[in-house]
Length: 306
Image (cartoon, rainbow, N blue to C red):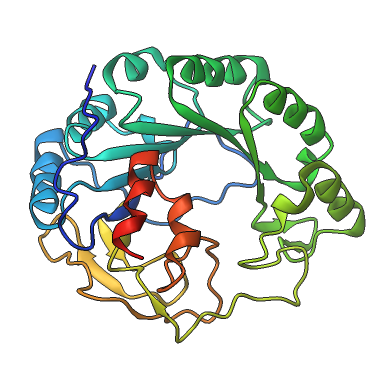
């Protein structure tokens, strides 16, 4: 098992960089509400990826990599890749937990990674899925469950949440983004659906620091404010293209494989008309958004920014 309680090279400004790495589009589930991006996945061997990430380490220090997809554990030789990455970087995962988690628990130290399990009731058996969550938690990993509030899945949500929280695991409700029966979501949840969401999720389904996704009325307008996205954060797509953030119209920062990727040297003004992110990195709001990013050791870096 890789153990490294001291995070290396965190003295390099901007002290910590966070990446969202959508490493692939491939998934073993075919959920009704999932619309994969029309982006071709670039398949690269572990050695080439490690050359890339070792170079990033030399420039920017130890980073935090959040893997998503698709289902990231379907990427070829994924365990070899993350085992090597964990020697210098910290990791987190959005995964449906459909694969055998024992190799992961044996290879990666609990101080190097955390796991968000995405439960998809169309394809997953809850008992099997939740058993893996409990195994990870008992091992010592920080874990939580993501549940997409797809309209047909709302009625079972309360029961699942009760079981999860009684076990001491965080249950996060994610808004459904897409169309269902002629309605555009998340803006147009019906009154009945909103009542379920408020009853089951309470106020945590309405983040007052970002979009109130129950209505069309409130938008998060941060355009023109200084933001560290692109300086302390970048979003990598399956084709290795890198952008400043997830907002429509965000700046391209290059390609992580061809050597053109480079972080911004300082915070820049937000470019997005409607920022979709409740943890966007606004300057002077570090005490808010750093609580959302990375493993606990990363969060302790807040003193260097305030």
